Image (cartoon, rainbow, N blue to C red; front, side):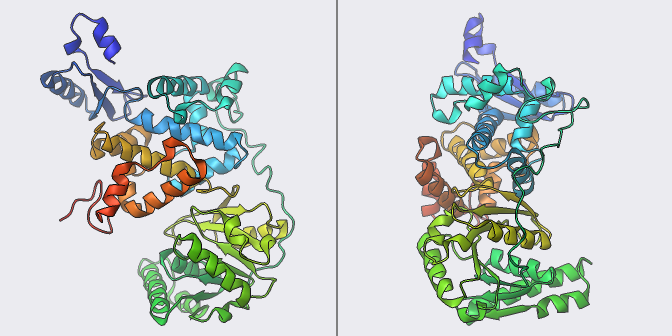
Length: 465
């Protein structure tokens, strides 16, 4: 923006007013100040935009402003995942729609914007920031050179019919599997937290017998209370009949003895995201269950192979990542390792479908699909706050009004927890080893101060009462 201002004879009178397309429908306007813009000029520009019925967010003069500066690295990373064979285009898009609540998958959005336009924006960001985070994936240049620029050309990452809809002839490709090894009648759950109790409820509702293990009678009691309270609310809302609730609860066994998991065909571990703790659990499960038992982890950020290596049945271990709250969220990420046997994966697929969930398949890399794409985006938003680029409120408004996200990134960090966010970002940075994935320092400082978001009463958008 300053280049345009300096080209005029009155740079102090130049501001940026970035309307979103289509301007008549989109409520957001980004108000961009340069180093030469005085306060009264900014105030007048804001009054003008607001007189048009727009919501105004203010930001400093950098390429991308707020929305594009956060959106396009996320889109670029989605294309990189596709290019690396991490997951199919359909699964990448489904994961972000179902797992993050985005109105459109990132690859569909790239096609809608246009691959040529995306590449141009990314190159502009890279020119200004000189960060590999913004280097366009080679896929962009290849497809653009071929003339496959997206929906407007009838072909981009997807192919399009004459009416602009995606041709689905290739949907489901790569999903052919053998028959399940066994039908899971008894499922074990290791852990008693929110995710674990949610899995117990969903499995029991699907008429699967469930054995839930906790370390102590106290933790087992908390899991029992969580399931009872959740199902009671479902009855109150008319989503579950009282008789069905009693039958559901009758299918749940809670125990503090790992030996009680032995009859289960499949056991899912869902304890704290601590690698050493999980390794210990998997060593114990190897001893407590027969060799035929499939062992799974509900980890959201750790490598599954590191846990599988602790067992004597490496081919019978995989990741089954449920999203929280489990009874509500439809998505499950299935994560086979390089050693997982195909019939074992097929058994997990059949179970997940029986539980009424949609599943996506991805490689065993930290973050899988959703967290791999979501948390660097959240970290970028935190870094914006740290640098004083825009306020948390304006950043969230930019992404909810400008990109139709269901919740702003900083409100989401508060909801997830700053400590959880930091842990996942650290895990991704340790694996990817790129500077752009390093946790924003303010995130670490706030966690040390005990400002963990909603659960502690203070975060980026949560103020202490």
